[in-house]
Image (cartoon, rainbow, N blue to C red):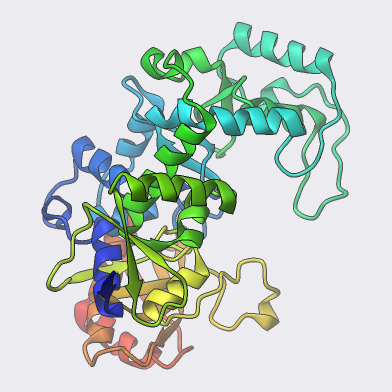
Length: 402
């Protein structure tokens, strides 16, 4: 059995995610082709409503492509020919639109259990009424369709009307699709036939096992090298189903069993994975970036303990509210708590920390990356607050960069 060092595994994983591609160099102007190639690398782009810096689905593209026109993503997801669509893939996420048939097993699963998290009481009349209204009105938000029914507040963070809950159910079952979002980030629901290209909507439904194999195949390509747990997490699949798909791909020669230095679990290398001799990446990673969203994998690959602290009460936060790991070369060498003050036109660095592996030029490289990020966000300046062991050096370097 082949054995990989931890450094090799890191380079394989980062290359698989698009951090070692000639077409993603920052000096090049990203195009729709660049975006599509990047999506092929990541397979999914998690969607999240937090907008303290930039929406979650925009950031992984920026980290890999450099400064790009965010209208590329809107065109790819809302205009013909639609290249990506939102569905419950990893969680709420953009995925390549051709995966729609491979999600029908999940749609059937949600239909059988009446929802994602909790059972939705059957209301055939409301379901039929909403589908008919969407058919007549076209793409609509829950607010457009809501008849003013009482909203429930028995779950923290939720304030959904009955209409909103039923629309979400119809979305998970594939009876409705997401046509886009409005300026308030509200979902626009529409009929699948007006969202999904016919070639994918009318494609034969794969068997459940065939769908699982395709999803694990994509997860393996995006990871490069991964454990069974990593592969299951990518599209949030049951472990047993993932294991059967891994067995099939291993037998076919697409996955190769390997050992990785320091890993206690078996790993699988995708046969097309690249192993660069070196990797010169420099990027800030969103908390929802595929490189870091599975925290156990992040720790195993980078020796980087990372927790998203958005939902942690402020006095208990260790590093900050919206903390982005800083990738330099093939290591995560620091982390920064960032906020875009759009009214003042400033990028605020609320805190900055260095890891033990951070090289001497970390502050200078991070400053350069923050300048680039501020430019992409249309912010005129950077303010570094004095919190964290990297803050003083970063303040000096940003002053020089400015």
